[in-house]
Length: 373
Figure 1 (cartoon, rainbow, N blue to C red):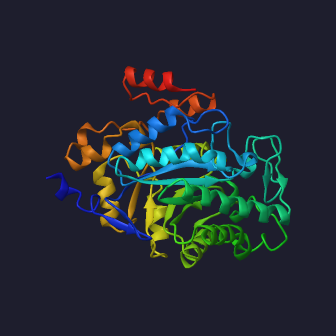
Figure 2: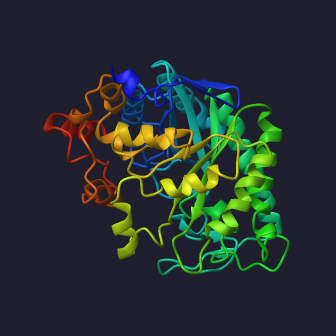
Figure 3: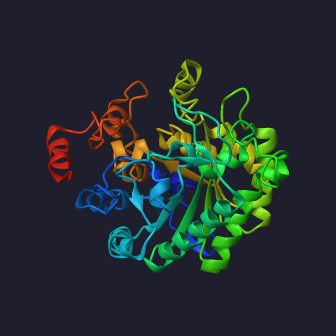
């Protein structure tokens, strides 16, 4: 029986009081399915309902902006005003209606925001743009925006909220020695550079009480002068001490993803798993591993070897929403895998079009295109 093969993968786990029916989670994945202005669209609802029908225990909805100025694109979901609540409430209900836990990731893109005046810890150029350095007053204001956004996530009926401290966005920009050149209490030593995420976490927890708060964790920027494990592990331990529900581990930023050596690394199965394993050695809270975990056998071995407690599937689940069902039924060979050499979805998103998978049949691609607003 498949259940015996993947006993750990299909065993339940409790995360900060929240029971998950198995160890499979959907890792957040931006696909450009929101409507213009960041509204929840019919396509977005359809997409996440399909993801919840997969059998994954937890669906983490892609990053939602805590302020319009912090949006990464015109089609980034927003959670910065109460006007967002009806759409977000429907989104949470669609996911939960399929017996999956629903989470929403909240974010400020910082120097990667698409607006006219991006802000960041320091004025470090990126992609021919230089962000403005935040004032101390603005830092506090943004922290409060995170807390207010988390409260809306709770009000919308989600089961948990996740702070986006990965991909080189604002929270990780404070932690990185490459992007944080401040000479005040938020810059300099690693103890100072982790002050911002810890204060965000505290303000969020003060606002939402015992509502679970997870953290998308940048373990290594994969840049010579960027954040590396020797410093990020200190943040992981401190996040645990401050009550984070789990740590979802990743590596790389927009400035390293397209380097030839990193592109080659990212084609390897389980390429981020060593980072998760390093984090798991220093914390007791659940750790999520992600990064091209394409087969149930690999997922099971990661869990059995105690390199992580949960498995995060992003493009793998998107390419084949039946991945968990096929794994449970022992139909591993029928799983439709995301090709490591295909980046068609990325190019569509960059053009402002909805992401479509080349592994889907013609009818499904047409369906998603027709639903795009």
